[in-house]
Amino acid sequence: MNGRLKGLLIICVNLTIVLAIAALWMQAIRKQRNERSEGIRVQIISETSADTLISTKEVYSWLYNFYKKDPRKMPVRSLNLVKLEEFINSQDLVKRSDIYLDSKEHLNIDIYQRHPIIRISDIQGNQFYLDEEGYKIPVSLKYTTRVIVATGNLSVVPGKSLDKKTRSYYSGLLDVAKALKKDTFANSLIEQIYLDENGEFTLIPKIGNERIFLGNSEILEDKLMRLKLFYKENMGRQGWNVYQLVNLKFKGQVIGKKLQQES
Image (cartoon, rainbow, N blue to C red):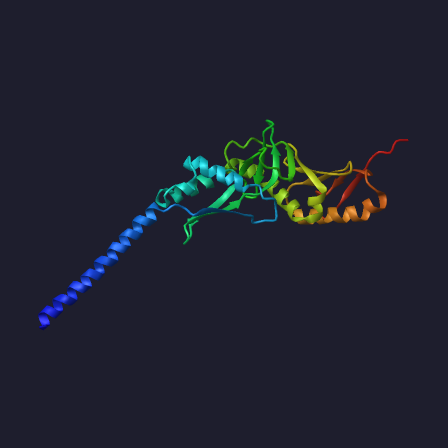
């Protein structure tokens, strides 16, 4: 076999190999496009120790609502994960989500949940929750969470989250709610925050008749430390239902006003 014929043979063999690889590649692509998801894995990720408010069952209902059918019966190519992620992120309790197919064609849905820190009852009687970022979460029969209730002179929040105007109004309340949540003693003691017309806060405890006047939302850590010391030094010695007011407004002071004793 001369050199020229040998060269042509090598070219033909290489071309055949390339065409075979290309055919296999195209077949794999067509197969992948027509493959269906092998399963769905849902993970609710909580960034705090708070309750999980989103159930796997509810996530499945979102999927059926979005696709109008079982996504496991759909070709992988038609799942449109970008649009699905946008839809999942639009749900009230979802902070963000990551949606992807793994190497085994399982549909993975990782959901980062929002956590309410306070329940609002505004001046028009509307009820809703706020999370730490000021995002508005509707009250629902699908989930319950034990958080402090805020009442009083609370303006209406028209959108899904605090805007520039309402954020400046609610920022102090959120600061108080965060401080109470962070303080183990205060969090177990307080059940309600009242905002008066002067923008000052009064705390209402779960037990006892006293009202705890905070004033504004400044130096909250110091105020709550003074409150804890006051309870430790006075309630254990004098008992509950002795004071009608505990004033923490002034720095370095705790002013207690006792209930008037019947003669």
